[in-house]
Amino acid sequence: MKKRKLSLSIALIVAVTGCVSNARAQSSATLFGVLDEGIAYTSNIKGESAVKTANGIRWPTYWGVKGREDLGGGWNAIFNLQSAFNINTGAMATSDVLFGRLAQVGLASNRYGQVTFGRQGDFMNDFLYLVPEAEQFLTTYSMAPGGLDRMAGGQLSNSVKYRSGIGPGLTFGAMYAFPSTATGSGAASNGYGRSFEVRYINPVVDAIAVYSQISGLSVTPASSIGTTSFLGYRLAFGASTPVQLRSLSVAALGISYVIGAATAVATYTDVHMDSGRESGSLQTLTLGGTYHFSRAFLFEGGASASRLGQSRWNQIVGTFDYFFSKVTDVYLAADWERARGAGQTAELNQSGGPSTTNSQAIVQVGIKHYF
Image 1: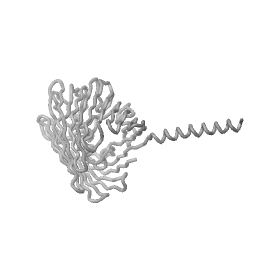
Image 2: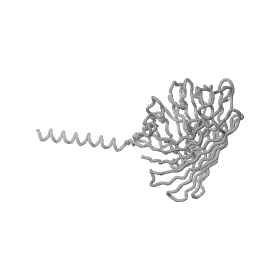
Image 3: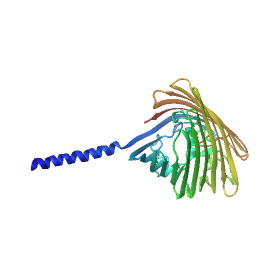
Image 4: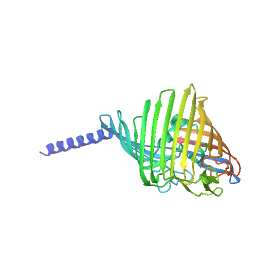
């Protein structure tokens, strides 16, 4: 009898272990991220040049964990959590928000697309993926003035996001963010957000059209785009005075085309803003691309022209990348901006402050590692 009970117990343990192993085989979780760090020289920040460490310039520095469980019938449960941070201090990039870069959970189908819930970026961030992630043709510094077109990323809390699929062919997406009091750069505060995307991808062409509308955002024009006059507000030079926007909407088009070792990129964004006192439109045209001299040696660069009212900005960026491996590269990047207009000085995106003149330049040497 004891032998029979022992045999039954062993059989039960084997069966349970087999079920657990099978369940684990049906699901996965992956730790991943990017570390990007360098030393930057800035020609003019409030009248002084500066040399400092700077992280997240070629690509945001963050860590994350993502997972997928096979539910059968082509369905999967998915999640993705990402936390951006400053590698120099260890501090979270978004104060008091652990997963400020991304926090989503949802369902994905091979046939019907995927729907996710949580804190997510709107579709404007997809413009950076007109080229592969390792070949980003812009730097953080060379985004549109103040990052107002949200191409550099902007998160919306309490959001629902649907994608019909992720390439190739024709796909579309829609997103809605419920009114929220979330904190952090790009978060909807006491307002709502919505975003729509239509995209076409084949081995040579990647084309995208996006419309996003967000209410309840505040911006700091004097300390982010170097202006003392913004949509009816008079601001002190370099001040962090917030300007509350009733609404911000972005209409954008982009296309990339692969020609041998080169990829050409063109994007156009039109950001319409209403402060309650005045409204205005920030329009930016960017032409750029990448070129592979070899498998290890890559050049990325571009030029852009922006305008808002009487203010004008022209930017040039160039980056030389050398890849030691598929996950580690070193780079030399140079960004330059020239601005003009009443009360307008130059200020590259996230440079640390406005220039006292109509030009600003940044040169950075850095290293980037994926894990």
